[in-house]
Length: 321
Ligand code: BYC
Image 1 (tube, rainbow, N blue to C red):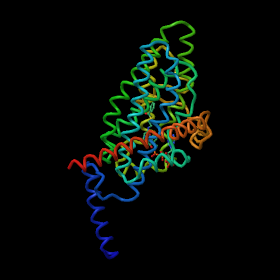
Image 2: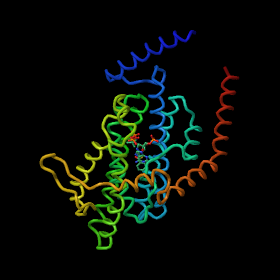
Image 3: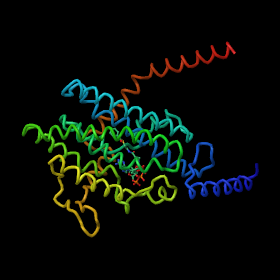
Image 4: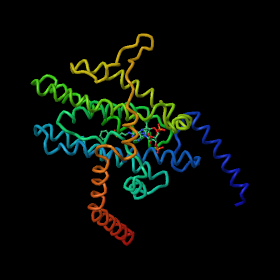
């Protein structure tokens, strides 16, 4: 094929791509798509998958210390759900032409990011409640818009994930509600967890729109449907009301209802802390990555056994046919 044929084919493909984006038709794996669109999706979907898998660690640490059998069973189910989310997302990512191994290598080498939130420690049982209420709450706020993202496999994965995240958020809120009605010590534990998780949860939405390098293009391509600041504001508005039910306080002196804006005003995030964590220097970054690398190495024999079994089954089926 001549170079000009390729250019013509690309410009035809681009026209169809743009029409689909304009008309809210999903882009599917075999459709033509601009290379930068593919790369942006690989970046976002793989980082999202890594976040789900790394996100199992802070809560996983409390499975053996859950205060009752019922709490243990719920927490195990929740952590397993996160593993499932990671798997749907790694699979969605593979449809963009990258292998699972490549994405995982990028996580282990530090090339790919994962959500800053999972680099904080879980110090008490109340942290499990705060993660459910605030972290899963922030995640849903972001992910509901992603059910309408323009890349089909990502959008479809998000539908199921959102249903599960909604259960996660409620179970977290219920843990805090129980503690908030408990002894003075339990109430203090509840407030302490909210104090430590509030600001990192606001950081989950990413930098201000003015500092967000990817937002403008991702909004044009309808990968993102709302900006980082819009979603963060929606989250603050929601939590500022929910915290009243708990009888607890959000650790922000500037949090105040603004009648004109019809939104809550709130204080400034410590962006130095955010970027420090994103660059790998948060309280648990090293611990989290070491845990993931160890799990990958220790799981090698399982992957090899599964591949050998699949090969054996294929040969058997071919021989039978
Ligand atoms: N942490 O241009 P921007 C869960 C990076 S897990 C680390 O605004 P974008 C759960 C960003 O990647 C849910 N890095 O980026 C699991 C970019 O760097 P690169 C996780 C961050 O992509 C277990 C740079 O900063 N959710 O639910 O347009 C238990 C500039 O940012 C962060 C998702 O992953 C951060 N917080 O917007 C419980 C949702 N923020 O990549 C719960 C999917 C920004 O150019 N992702 N950066 O090197 C997204 O919606 C978007 O990627 C973001 C950022 C809103 C996060």
